[in-house]
Every structure is written in C-alpha cells, then in structure tokens.
Amino acid sequence: MMRYAEGVKQIPAAAVPYEDAEIIAHLARSGKVKMKMLLTPKTLPNTTSYNVIADLKGSEKPDEIVVVSGHLDSWDLGTGALDDAVGVAMAMQVPYLLKELKIKPKRTIRVVAFMNEENGFVGATQYAKEANIEKHFAAIEADLGASHPIGFIFAGNREALPFFAPISKILNSQGAGQVDVKPSASSDISTLTEKAFRHSDLGSIRGLISIIITPAADTLDKVVPKELAENASLMAVLAYGLANLEQPLPR
Image (cartoon, rainbow, N blue to C red):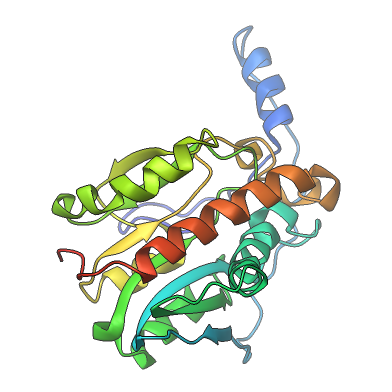
C-alpha cells in the first residue's frame, strides 16, 4: 500500500518489475535517464469483504489457539500466486496433513486467510479487534513466496527461543531448521502482536518473492509444487510443535 510520510510533498510513485529496475539502474550508471510512465490506478470506495477462518480443535486445550495464516488478496494484473496464494495454501494444508496422519494437536490450530493485507492489513486488524488475543498462543504467517525453505523467522521474546530447539532439530533433517530472529512481526500478524502476545512468523528465508513482486509476473507458473509442499510441511511441523508445547511461551 502506498504511503507518504507526514510533511513531504506527495509525488506519483509506481512499482516496476525487478528486471526493469535492473535495466534502469544500468542505464543510470551511464547518465541521466528519462522515462515515460502511464499510471492508471484509482482509489475506489470501501466495500465489505471477509476473512476466512477454520479451526482444527485441540484435544486438551481447545481454547488456546495457534494461528497459521496467509492473505487472500493480491495486486491486480497477475493472479497473486506467490503473494500470497501459496501462503493460504500452506495454511490450509496444515490441518489436512495432521488429519491425514491422524495426529491431534493439544491446542486448536486455526487457519486464517486474511483479507485486504495489501491495502493496510484491514482484515487482520479487524480480526485482532474481535479475537480473544489472550487465548492466542502463537501466530504463524507465510507471506514470502514458496521457494525451498531453509527455516523460519522468529519475532518475539528471546527467552522463548530455547522452546524452538526440538522443532528446529526435526526440521534440520530436511535442511529447514535455521531460525532467524527479528525484533517485530511482519504483515498481518503484526496486528496481533500489537496486542502484546508472543508470536512466530514463518517464512521461506530466501525465495522468488524478491524478484516477482510485481503483479503482472506473479502467476501460477512461478510456483514449484515440490517446494510449496516443503513449505507446507515446515509450517505443519512448526504449528504442531507449538500446539503441543507443555508450557506457555514467555511473553
């Protein structure tokens, strides 16, 4: 979503494909670059849309919730395959995999497909307002594409990191046990963490999303089914591990 800092002159702005940006940068090294761009966006009236939510009920602590999520909306022109249909697909696959394996999580695993992430986290903000945040144990989001996963990103109280060691050990067998730490959550689940609870932000640390962020190129042919399945498996292991922790994570 386009934003301007307070007190600055608002000028037209546009995102360009990675490949085009490389060409522009190359030309700029040789001198001044002139471009003609046709910008056609419109600000339309607000309308009502919905998050999509489904629960796999926990066997022992059903009132405690581990969220697995992605977002439903995308930029126009393309199909939003990597940003973020793959994230929604991963989240949906988590309860499917657990049921196929006849594994029951102790806490409830909730699939949330957030609406209107691209335009200001509106669906996630509304979810945070209406949900009982104190009953949310952890939140996982996939919004970084679906290339081969090498681990996940953790944002929260560093005292919680030792709790992830057993999960990371399992994931290491697939080359996906790396844990990166950052100070705050990203995307939709940041609205939940503003209500002050611990969270885990899952993502493929390296992926195609960095070069296919422009909407026209974000199409289904960029998705590698094997790598999408690997990401879904990583999310399922992480969600199940969190759902079955014996004690709460430090806030």
